[in-house]
Length: 211
Image (cartoon, rainbow, N blue to C red; front, side, top):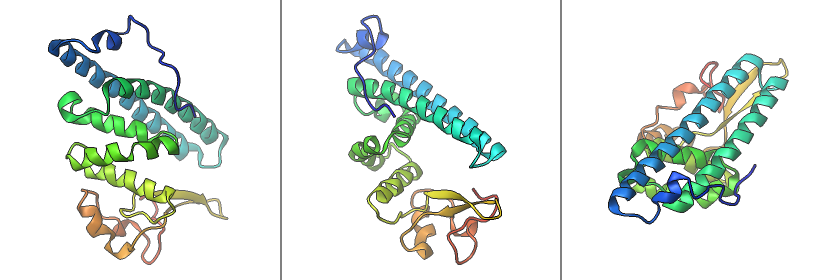
């Protein structure tokens, strides 16, 4: 996936004309930044809705699913390229600059980037959470993934996978987790719904229809 490129903007780009200008123009630049993040984040979520629909209709091992995954990966790389240009110009977004929703969109664009890009934003995303600008559920999802990259068990139970059984049925299962018995107490602190009721008792397997 493409993680960086030369700046594709031109002098006529409204973003370029707003950099380094007065306070009024800075406000206009913030509105433009918010708009661009919203556009990118909305497209990201729309693509994922379509991807999930293909998965549910055709299944994990289908040619349609493989094509949908390639398509989404390509679109993710294009969005990431645009986000990196924006973030280089404006910095990591703050609530006072772009609003709460746009910060979540920025987080999603990073979350759906290649591993090394995700890792490079760890401090910024953690700081955003500590400032109360990124929801706890989003931070928990990001942290669980980073722990997985480090070969450590996740803390909040946000990471799972799907496997195809011998009978052809698909099964969702939780990836390795720290102290499963206490996971719902940890999830409560980041406003995540209880996990244990979703699992087959005594296993890491999700009950049918849970995922």
